[in-house]
Length: 637
Image 1 (cartoon, helix red, strand yellow):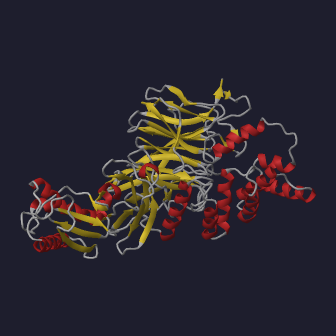
Image 2 (cartoon, rainbow, N blue to C red):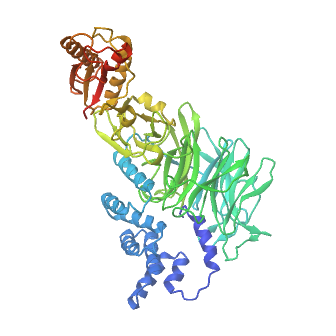
Image 3 (cartoon, rainbow, N blue to C red):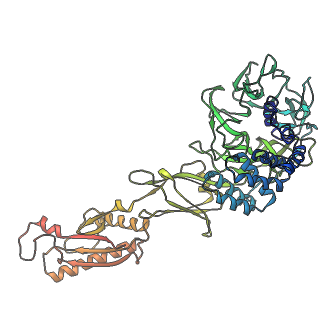
C-alpha cells in the first residue's frame, strides 16, 4: 500500500467509466494498476510494432511503479525529448529514476541544462537540499517506534484529538465494503489512546463522525474551533456521485462541536486531501489536484471565518509545490511541515520543513533527513509538546520492517526536528528615496572568510537567502556606483533575525557628487577656516565627517583635496596657508580612518584660481572676497 491510495481511488473511478475502444492489452493492464502484467504486454506489443508516445510513457510509469528505475529512466529520457508528451509530473519521475540509478552530479548537471525552463525555486531547493543532506548538518537523532495499533492493512494520517490519536485505516470493520483496487476495506477513521510513553493502544472506529460505506480519511481536529475536518467520498443518496465525465472524487467536510456536518470543499471533478486548520491565520490548508498545479497534487489554502470558507483556493507556489506531489500540510511553532516525492529527496515521499515569513512567503523546504525519512514513503508528519523542550510526534510510512503496507510510527525527541538553517529576506534600497535597487551583488561568508552563498537582488530590490546554519557570518553587498555594505552577525544576532525583514540601504554615488568649476567633487556645505588659520574647527569637521563616511562606503574611491584662498595678503603667504589647510584636512581624514591610499593628493592653490575680479589691488566687498575662499574634495576615481 502506498500513500497515494486516494489518487488510485480517483483515477480508478475515472477509468471504470471510460470506453475501452482502441486500447491495447498493455493499456488495459496499466489502467487497472497491474503494472507487471502491463510491462509484459507492452514488451510483447512493441515486438510487433512501435508503441505510441503515450504508451512508452505508460511503460515508463509501470517500470517506475515496479522500482525498475534503469528501464524507467531510459524511457522517460526519450519522452523528455518530445515536449508535447512529457508532463512536469513525469519529469519529476524521470529525475527520481535518475537519482536511483546515477550519481547526483548527473542529475544536477541535467538540471543546469534545463535552468531556463525550470523555476528558479526548484533549482535552488534542489541545490540546497543536496548540500544539506550531503553534510547531514544539525539533524536530531530520531528513535521511531511502530505503534501497537497497526494492522496488516494500511494505517495512515495520524492526528491529535484531545488525549487520543485519530488515524485512517483500510482494516476491515463496521460492515465496510471491499475497495477493489487494493483488496482492502474502504478507508475509515479510528481513534486510539496515547499513553505517557507515546504508545498508541485500544483502536476502535471513531464514532463521532457519521457512518459512510465509502472513504473517510485524513482527519484534523482544531482545538480552537473544536471542529473535525476530514475528507470523504462524494455520494448522493448513499451512493457514489460522479461528474459528467464519470469521475468520482473526494470532498472536504467539517463536523462542528455540536455534531453538525457540512461540506466545505466539494467538486465532483476534484479530489481534496489532508486538511489542516491554522487558527492564527484562519487559513484552511489542504492538498488538491487542481488544473493549476505545478506537477501532481499541490498544497493550497483558503481563508475562513471560523471554518467558513471566505476565499478561492490559493496555491502555495513553487517554493513549496514542485513537479512531484505535495501532501499533508502541518504548522507548528511557525514551521510549515509537509510531504513531497520531489526528486531530490531520499526516495518516495519525504517530510520537509519550511519557515513562514512575515510577508506570508516560505523559506526553502528542508528535508528532515534520515531517521524521519527513508527510501520509501514517509508522510503525515505531526508533532506537539510533551514536556520542557520535549516533543511527541507521529507519521505514516511503508518503510521496511512494518506490520502492513503503511504503518504509523511514533517518536519522542528533545528539540525541534529538522536540519538547522539560517534564512534572511529583505530588500536593497536607496537610503535617500527608499526605492528598491535591483542587481545588487550579495555575498555571505563564514567565519573563516569562505564564500558560502552568492546572489543578486531582484526587481524592486527583493532578495531572499538561506544557508546551512553557521556559527557567525558576514554579509557583504555591492553594486557599481553604490556604497559598500558589510555586516558581521553573531549566532545570537542570527537567531534574532528569524522572521524579520532585513533591508540594506545604499548611498548612490551620483547622488553624493556634483560638478563645480569643471570638476566632479563631493557634495558638501560651504565651510571656512578661521581667518589666517589652518585648524579644522567644529563646522569644518561636521562636513569632513561626510567625506569619512563616503570613503567607508566607497572603499575604491580616490580623492584629491584642493584648497583656495582670497587675494588678501601676499601671494606667497596665501599659497602657504592654503597648502597648510589641505594638509590639515588630509590629517583629519586619516585620523578618522580614511586610508592614506584614498587621498592621492592634498594641494593648496592660494589665490591662483580666483573666481572673480578681486585680484590684488582691486577693491572688493568682503562677500566677494569670500567667494574665492573655498575647498573641494575632488573625485579622482
